[in-house]
Structure formats: C-alpha cells, structure tokens
Image (cartoon, rainbow, N blue to C red; front, top):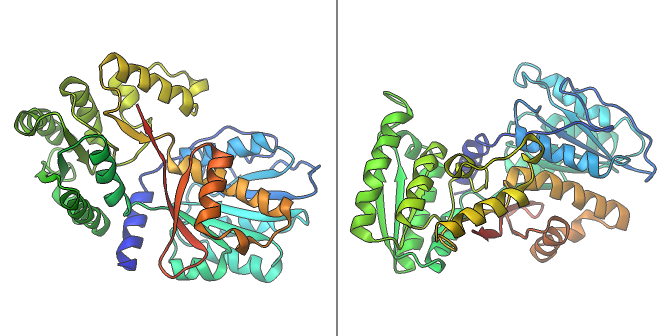
Length: 382
C-alpha cells in the first residue's frame, strides 16, 4: 500500500501549478536573490518552482516573503529542472552559505533534490530542513527533518463521508480507462466505493469517453452533459457527483446549478477550479490569490441559486496552504528555540495549522515515518 500511496502522490501532485509576486527578499525567475539584512537575527529560505512552472507554490512563497521581508528569502528552481538539476541543488545549497540561515524549505513537484539535503546535513546540521517533494519517503525521512504532503488517498474516505453528511443517498464516480490505469486513482475509487457502501449509500461508477485517446476532452464533456441529467432523473438530486479529471468540472458544476445535485468536493478541491468560469466570477488580477473573496462570491452565487449547503470544497489549494504553513512552523520552532521533534505530533500540528492559517489541517503520519505527515484540509460549505 505504501508504494501505491507514493504513486498516487507522484501522479496527483503534478496537476498542481503555482504563482507569485516578487518582494525585496524574493528571487526573480532566474533564481537570483536580492539580499536583505535580517533584523530578526535569522532567516528562512524557501525554494519553489518558477511562476510559469508552479503558480500556487510560487505565490505562496511570495506571500510569506512579503509578510516577513526581513526573514524569508525566496528563490526559484531552474525552468528546465530535469536538465539543470545540479543548478537547482547548488541554488539550495547557496542558502546554507548564509550564517543567519536557520531553516530551508523546498516545495517541488519533482524528485532529485535530496543531495542538497544530504550536503546541508553535513555542512550545516544546525539548519532545520522541511520539504514537500516527490522523492521516496524513506530517503526523505532520513535526510530531511520534516516532510509534509497532501493526503490524496485519504480523500477516498473523507469525500464520501462529507457527501453523506450533506444528505447524499447516491454517489456517482465518473472516470475513464487511462485515468483508472493509474494506481492511486483506481485505489481512491476503490476506497470511495467501500466507504460509500459502509455509509449505506449506493455507489455508481460511470466510464466516460477517454480524453487521452481519440478526440480529446470534447467527447467526454459532451457525454457528461448528456449523462448527468439521466443519472439525476434516475437517482434524484440527493446524489453526489465526483469526477477524477479536472476538465470534467466545467460541466459538472454547471449541471449542479441547474439540477441541484451535490458536489461535496472536486478532484482538486480549490475555489478556483471551474467555479469562476461556470459562475462568471469577475476576479481582477489583484484578487487572483484572494481566496476569501472568491469563496464569498461562490457562496453568494450558491445562495442565489438555492444551492446553499449543497456544494463544498477546500478554502484554498493545498499547494498554496502547505508552503505558508511550513514557513510559519519553521518560524515558530526557531523563535521558541524548541526541538523540531517536539512538534511532530498530530495534536500540535492540527491546532497550530488552524492558529496560523485560519484553516485547520487534519494531519496523519505516513506509515512508519515519524517525521512525514500527510494532511487534508477542513471543508468550506457554500
């Protein structure tokens, strides 16, 4: 199961992208860093992909650089990561050259950066290391002090459970063959089916035309447009619909507002997936990362459509949440002068995440690793 969990993480983490703005302590996209004296007496380095590569993580790091300009230094990995892996490693190691550097955080949807952490441990064992990466958990746990990741597989339990609480009696799962060929997509489907049946709901699986073969997404979306009304006519509006593929939600949410069925959570639970397009939300450039505003706009639209309480998701993407949480956690450990091992427990992490982020994370250790935690976020109901 551990191997399958990691496969799912590798597959699903790649769908998240990231953005940001620059600050006095933030790198440009070439990885250059503008130095600033740290009046706090210490610095935290955070490394992400570039704006064009991973928008959410880049944005999250830039937010923290703006929030703590005397503390946080943000640099980016090379655009051509696979070709310039050694450059990326060197950039991470350059942070350790700063005697004020007390923590280094790396958020990357790629593998291959572990040698940087091995060198940091040899060169600067006093530096706290935190990562969200795609390398093997046993290696990450060995060379990195703290590791965090989104628990995509556990959502096979949390989504049906929430759907039941929202009033669902039927749970429909839409997917297609090449997606189900991925271990974690198939495993999550199996966990969903088991959970749905244990909760006394009916599980319905529907296979759509495959967008990765033939004519792309158009046949899949047309199928959904025709099939969803048939399913709701058969099972009624107290039906939750879930799709394993992001493009599905342009149709699913549009049909939800027409037919009043439930959508407990999208495959990528963020207010910016499909909602702005379907609802015609006017979001200016200055509000792209203002999730409170976007959530308020969705809530108002749900109220107007008499859909209050029938739509849910996460208040922000986990790829925006995790980097900010990691910076706040590093800052707390450094300023309180405590051993990082003292915070590696679910009770502390759950409470601390809510305190610093305003959104509670539900953390669980990954397998036998005591320094690798996976999380899901509390839900928002529109």
